[in-house]
Image 1 (cartoon, rainbow, N blue to C red):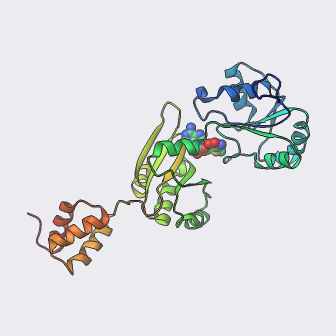
Image 2 (cartoon, rainbow, N blue to C red; image 1 turned 30 degrees about the horizontal axis):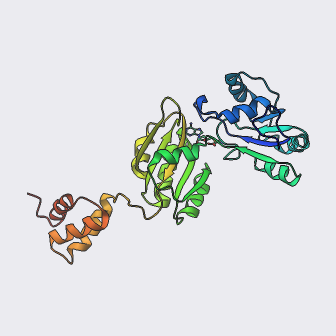
Length: 285
Ligand code: SAM
């Protein structure tokens, strides 16, 4: 059997994950495949050229992207019957919000072997930073940019009991956060940015807080949004707390109403007690 760590690679298709910012994240196995593939199908030869330069190799590259995939795919499928063809994207794991699944589909249909060389993926890396449940998650890629289509896409997933993960750009971030708050309710979320790079950060808060934070200050760099599932503890808004207090005060004493609402909404009881007195026109002392 031919091992993928011998200089000669068996013919077939190799799906190679590459770094999402830190070149140190290129795995030795990925470097080995890229060093020995007969040809590397790339999104942008300048980007992959830098990566090859980093590992000190020169290999033939051929463009494979959304605009030429239909024309180029048959030639690549023919080649992988005799040679090792590698597929990379500009960053991260090919096929994840990047071209490639039809190449894998057709490679299998033609009877070729497909190997995966797993590695960095911004969606998974973001989940490890966000501090939100990871037992079930749903990857949404990029939401549509037009408001109506975006709202429809959000409504479609509002009832799904899973953490949501999506890609977004800085200029659209605040609008998207606002649309998510409206369509999903004000869930906890994390804006993860520039993962594995110098300015890596994860900013957490409710969707509406985050929307307000970024409204006048669109962040630079690459972004992944992670949103808590429905039913996870949500920060109650002041309006929610007022409505619940007003209702509880029709049945209970001030202290009991504050306790009940504090428990139901996970809000501070002392603050609710003071607010209840205010609402009754007593004023807190
Ligand atoms: N295939 C890639 C992967 O495995 O993550 C994703 C490709 S998609 C076209 C590019 C998007 O991924 C960016 O717009 C951004 O939302 C996200 N992304 C890529 N690198 C990132 C990074 N270092 N930090 C945060 N988000 C990143």
